[in-house]
Amino acid sequence: MFTDPFAVTYNGASLSLPRTETWRGYNVYKTANSEFSLITANNLRAPKDGTATASIRLVRTIPDPTPGDAFDAYRAIKNGFSLSYSFDVLTRAEASVDLPRLRSALLALVDTTFQGRMISGEL
Image (cartoon, rainbow, N blue to C red):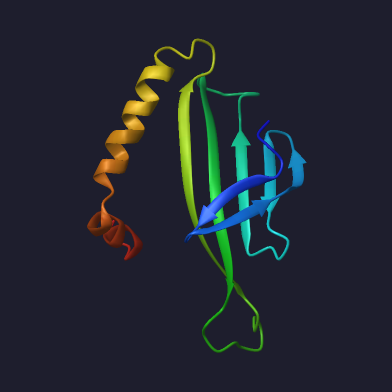
């Protein structure tokens, strides 16, 4: 289990996110105004193919900047960023070596141009 509250820096501002929910393998942390939430997930319980996944996701919720309609006038817009690790649940073979290398390689690939292409839906 991680610290409670979580401390995150967003755009130079320090945020405190105390845990607000917990259930089988999931924890949710939120700022007091619910603008930011952080979700940790760990599905080590019953992997079907031997692969376990652990992930963390930071989400910012903002009001809808477009004019509302009669059905959904106050729709919340959610922008999020996730990091997910997958590894063999039984052996964790080379996970401590491979995962940092894979993370570094992927983060080097996702520069500003690549990120813009992903956001614009070019995948």
